[in-house]
Each structure stands twice: as C-alpha cells, then as structure tokens.
Image (cartoon, rainbow, N blue to C red; front, side, top):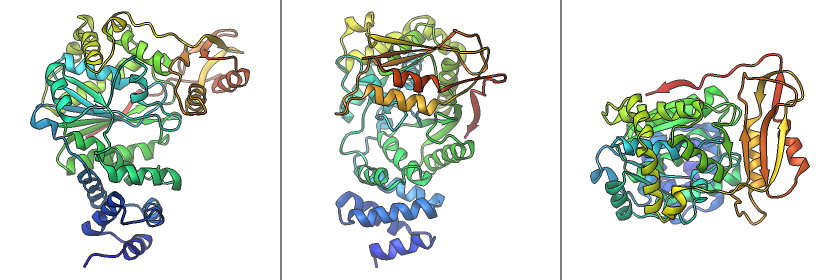
Length: 425
C-alpha cells in the first residue's frame, strides 16, 4: 500500500528513513500536482531539519531526473564531459573550460544556470554576447557537439520538472541550503544531459554559497558519491572563493576576460583553477591530456577559435566576436587604499550582492555593462592612494561606492589562501 502524504511527512518529521516508494511518491506529487504546496513545504522543512541519508538522496535525485526528459548524449558522443560550479563572484571558469577541452578533442556539454543571490549566473554572462541563444534541444546539442565539441545552454521546461516545483518552494521556505536538496536539485539537471563524467567545482570562503569548509566539503563529497551511485564518473575540487576570481566581476566584462584567458593573458589564479579542473575532467574519461597540451591550444589560438565557433553556432555575430567590443558602463569610480598594509580580508559575498543589485533593474532586466575591476589580491602590499578596485556604473551612486570600499580590509597581516584545498574522488 502506498503511504499517504501525512504518513510520509510524519515519518520524516520524526527522523525516520523513507522508502524508495515514499521518496518517489513525493517527487511524483511535485511533478503531477497531487501534493499541494503546504504538504511539499512541510516535507522540505522536515528534510532540512532531519536530513536524508545517502540512499534517500540517490532516490530523490533519480526520481526528479526521471520526472522529465533525459538526453543520454553519451550514447552519441563518447567521452562527453560536464562541469558544475557552486558559483561565486567573478567565476567565469565554465566559459574558459569548455573551449579549452574541446580544442584538445574532448567534447563538453553544460546546462548553465542563472544568478542565485550574490552569485553570478553563467547563462546570464553568455547572454551578454549579442545574439547568443541558449535554448537547445537534444538534436541540436548532438550536432553542435559533433561539429564543434561544445554545447552550453539552459535546461528546457521538460528537464526535471519536479525539481523546478520543489526549488520554487525551497526558495520560499528557507530550505535552499539543505545539502541533500541541493544535491538532488543539481544532479537531476546535470544527469539529464547524460554526460560520461562530471567534474564539480565547489567553492569555499566568503563569496561561496557554502562559505564554511566543512559544509563545502560535505556537499562536494555528496555530489561525487551520488553521481557515482547513479552510474556517472565524477570527482570534485574544493576551490577558493574568499576573493573575486580573476580580474573582473560583471557580465560583459567577464566575457571579455574569457577572451583574454583564451589569448594567453589570463589571471594566474583563475587559469590555475581552469587547468586543474580540466586535468581532473580529462582523467575521468581516461584521457592523458597534460597541462602542456592545455597551454598549447591556448598558444595556438585553437581554444579561442572554438569559443567563437560555439558562439556563432548558437546565434552570435562572428564579426563581433573576432574583435569583441563590450562597452562598460560609463560612470567610473575608483576605490583606493587609505593606509599602508596588506590586503587582509575581502567581503566577497557583499561585493556580489552590491554588483547584483547594481546591474539589475526593478523589473529584473540585467545591464551587462555594470562591472568591477579587481586590482589587488589577498596578501598583496598596498600603499595609500593605490587603486584597489574600479567600479563601472550606469549612473553615479556614492552610497554603493562607499559600501564597496568597506568590502576591502587592509591590516598589518594577510596572506593568499590556498587556491585548491582538496580533490574529492
């Protein structure tokens, strides 16, 4: 006999383990509407408080995955790689990672996400390229992978509809940060494309979605273990997000920085994260691609050419991409150091929040030209009057500039944190 919603809720409220049938009943109720919002909200809160064990998490993921379309792209494209980042401030790794591996002969497929809170969305950044279209189906994806080796889009309405329903309620019930629910949400969409392997970039530090190391490590381990349990090779890196990653924060500016990286002029910290993730991903599909191979496809121009070819294939103007000209917002404001010392701490989350609200209108429309240039890094020596950051806004905003200046703390001590803390495999 199938348990009633009340019985399922009562079991989890008391900390009991749900059966596979009960977990799938919840997912089916979300997808078909047979569970109403109060019931689903109560279940989400019970999970946030009581948790799910590894088996329950796998059942949840599998159920949400099965609630919609599954593309199984690896059936047509062997050695297909996917990547997921938990997001941060200035994180444009996906934009560089994809053409880099494609230029080395390894295809990459990613369903990218929108901005979430203070974290920037890869899809929003890509859409700052004029003409780019991110709505794709399976047939188009296979064609792009065979021709170019890259496909980057957004999840269709038919992919993991149960997750879409549950996520909307998580946002309203304060359960977004529940790790089992995060794992199920991420993987129900990631596994839907059907890559051979997934590499996870889980951020740690003040700008991360999970800033505490213990939480980030647990999330990374659960993402990797659940993927493996469901038959997909996976590993993850815990990487630093205690300061913006790279030189720029902002949609158009981060695309411009992507071109700099693909032309061999990338920020060393940013490129090290890209290289480490690319090497890890290649190993998951049995490839022996080396750091030298990755550097060579940048030096030859092949990686840049792949990015341009991908963008043109998804609607961008090729003449624009040959000589990218993204205008930055017209009003500049310089943030300067007010004392001698070392860059000791950066409130990266606050930077992300301030930039997100500056770039988004009351109607939710994004202005991709709003940007921040990050000129120093943690541990750097600074002098009075030295430029720390430069802000590009649509109009003068002294209050925002003042708030941003307070995000950079200069003290007598400070050091650069590790860039990659740990590999989880």
